[in-house]
Length: 89
Image 1 (cartoon, rainbow, N blue to C red):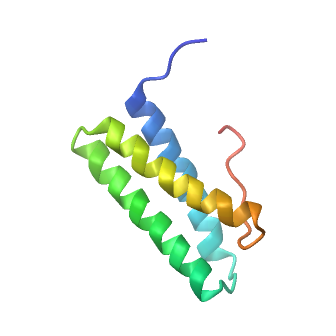
Image 2: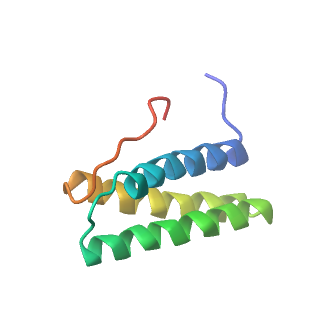
């Protein structure tokens, strides 16, 4: 299996988180105030990841997007938010 470049991996994770957030925001889900706060944090980490990637800080971008993905995944696992990840994760 060919190794994926870290910058491409960061872009892929960013797309995955964007995919999940679009579902969360468009499903007309009424999110609890605390759940909404966690979603906002995930959005902040997403924006940070994009900025770090543009600035060439690929490792930091991967760290930020991993935090974002982890927050969203925790909400999904706890059944506090409904969304799915892309099939080609």
